[in-house]
Amino acid sequence: MDLFNFQKYIDNKILDRGWEYYQHNSIKSITKENENTYTAIVAGTDDYSVEVQLGGNNDIVYSHCDCPYDLGPYCKHEVAVFYALREMLERDQDYVTADSTFALPARPVKSKKKVPAAKESPYDRFTSIISAQSKDKLVQFLVSLSLEDDAIGRRVELEFGADDGEQEYKKCIALIRSYIRQYRDRHGFVSYQETSGAAEGAWMVLERAEQAKDNGDYKRALHLYLCILHEMVPLLQSADDSGGFIGAVIDESISALQSLAQANMPDDAQQHLFQKILRESSNKIYNGWPDWRLGLLEACAQLTVTTERRKIFEKHLDSFMNEFDGSWSSRYLTERMAMIRYQLTLKFAGEKMAAEFMEQNISFPLFREMAIKKALSQKEYDRAERLALDGEQHDKGMPGLVNKWKELRYEAYRLSGQIDKQRSLAIELIMAGSFDYYKKLKATYAKDEWVSVYPSIIKALEKQKGYSGNYTNILIEEGELHKLLDYVKTKPVYITEYYQHLLPTFSNEVYHIFVQYILDEAKRANNRSGYRKVCSYIRLLANIGGKEHARQVTDNLLATYPRRPAFREELRKIRF
Picture 1: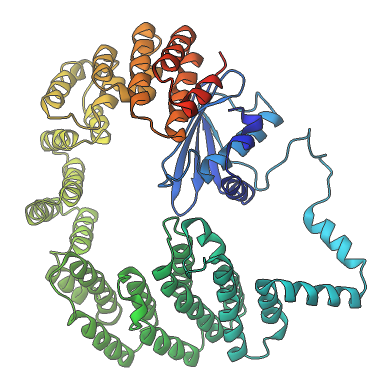
Picture 2: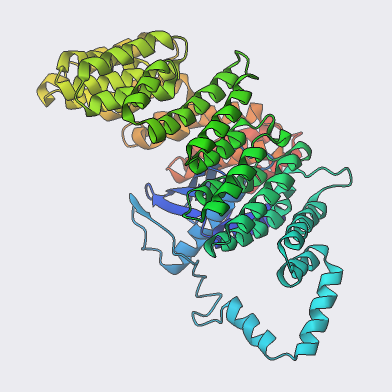
């Protein structure tokens, strides 16, 4: 697939969303890993990593994104990166060198071949057109547009027809619902592909709420944030929000409420916010969404600045605690609420009482971590070690927490200069899969000492069933390429990940492993997406010097699968 003509091969909806991500500066950075490979970080619901490999003629021979999208061969994050790479290459082929990382410009610069540098911006163009029209013509046009499109009509009503807070609230609800209606199906459900559009009205109201906050109109801002929550949280019951678009506007509204609670405002406004948010935290729409309810309670805690409010707030917390059972989710909620109480104790009773409260709740990971870090900062290394060891015992069976306590115990040994304990614990963490602690352990030895240490670690990892995830990183770190080759031979799926390390020394072996992997993947492929992936591996093989092997495996597949027309069509697109 040609980078300069990739739009021909990708669904229009994905192209539109990818273009939107590209235009809105969602690509944080692109790194050129080597002559053909680029990795990019794209901001979405989370930060996603995209890898793209280009062939000699700027063909996209391989592309992968670690987002959860699986409804097609390419996602919007990959498409955004394709646009960015094309722009880079059009601007200056020599701009990016291997191992360089750069952030994209704040506004994408389009290719000089297509758009003159001095082209008028859309804002200036529309300003010029609209300014030239008469008032009557503009009024007639806006009325017509408002009648044709319900969402636009609701925006016009909100912008120009909201005379008071109550009217504004109702019109914000109408605007949000107009976008939901526009994007839901006839059964009232918003599909995965449509959630971004369905959330647009809520984002507009959020912007309005932010303006109210900036203007010091805190009560109005609160009502608008709550308006968003009241419409968008229930929407999750009739939407597929796998992409996180609805959740994102809810998260942003909760965060904005927490920020609002910290604003310096008059007492009456603060009291109003306290009462409203306290009541909101009991709303049944948050049943099943504990993090959002906790977010509201945390905002309320910020507003708890008097003894009277503290009594009311803690009584409110008690009412929740009485409903908890012994489940993991209840324990999580209890821990977070205990942390809220700790902050209140610190605020109203001082550090001594807060320290006692922390000790009483030390079985909660948040409190144990806080206590260990406090001990480390005060150079109480024996106490830090004891708390960490107790945590390892208490949370046995939860590997993530056990590793956290071990890492903090490692810090106690490092800071106190207990090198033998430090090394011993580093080996435990290495055996649990950590490559970072392998490098930390290595740093404690002189070069001539290390050469006799690391082989025993590799041998110990090899004895573990399935090996740890850091095994291959260690082999690369120490230049143990024969072992890396043996490992990849047993697991050909890793050839696409490690071929760059093996190719200079074992080119023929790499080509043969690639061929075997391609044949294995061809057996598993059963749709066009799978066929394209197989073909991308063939192109990659050709581009790393195995052109003859790539040609032979292509002929082999054409002969082996005469009754897979879609596969054969993709294979015939390959150019050597």
